[in-house]
Picture 1 (tube, helix red, strand yellow):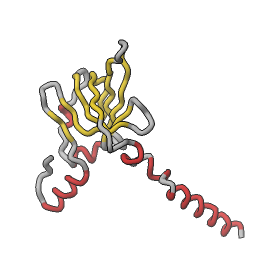
Picture 2 (cartoon, rainbow, N blue to C red):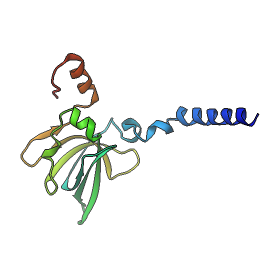
Picture 3 (cartoon, helix red, strand yellow):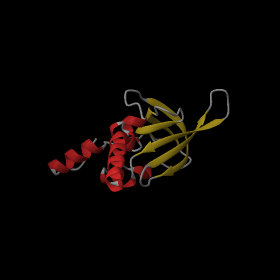
Picture 4 (cartoon, rainbow, N blue to C red):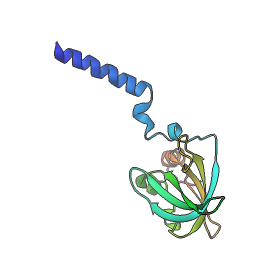
Length: 144
């Protein structure tokens, strides 16, 4: 009887957990970032890490009243960026860049990468998974 009770309790807890999106929200761009809005953030690249499970760019951004604050840009994982042939090596610590992001739903200093305007005028963009999937299906090279 105790085993059956435990199975029911864990089953109900699991259903509630996933029914409310909590189990998937951590890795959900839609849950964490407002895709109906975009914001341009200009700053000096302080840190740049292409890694798994998330890549991150940290910008030093001038505050309106003086001083500097950090803005964090979350991005896809290293494996996805490599598969999608994103030229991430063009972003360098110390460069001043303008990154267009979808703002976080919770934090004012966090956004999800859309495009980056680099110092030489290059616009770096990530086509995303759909473009990658289509290129694989068609047997073509991914292009944005």
